[in-house]
Image 1: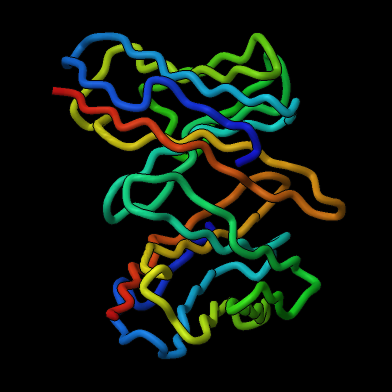
Image 2: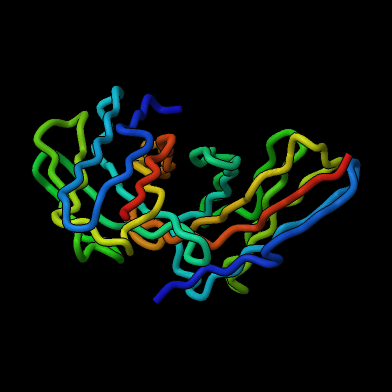
Length: 111
Length: 114
């Protein structure tokens, strides 16, 4: 059974710092991995999707990497800003349209 | 936002009452999903649909039923609500972006069962 974990559960950093969020999954047979952002009381916003054949994806200050063989993905946020404060979730698609979510990392960027 | 709306956005009900949540999408997506989100558990799939009248169970389907009589609407019903069903419920669609599917979420419904 696929399990997805995220470390750390919470993170607090000063503004301007570069940071890395981690996502691990137990079964490397995935179709893709998706990173989401969730603001308090809101729905999920898709940030990046990495296909199983890809190693990384970039969008602005965000860079996501994928290492299927080791069951890991990282989300790198450059030059963090207070507006980046949110919960970040990773999710893996394990079969056609079955998605398993991690518990999320709560990020706080301190001005 | 992939044109997904959920109603109601907030609901308080009593144990034992039936509750129906509605998800509406405007872009003719085939796949629709219902998740619940709870502290310590993340998002868990309740049911999903792969077309009109085609549905299947997810990880935590006990106590829930769904219906999809039109492409644009996916209904989640709690036949007899229990306090353990207090949660935030999210609807999602899956959009085909060749060669992969990407999920997009509605704003959520906060349900409290007293």
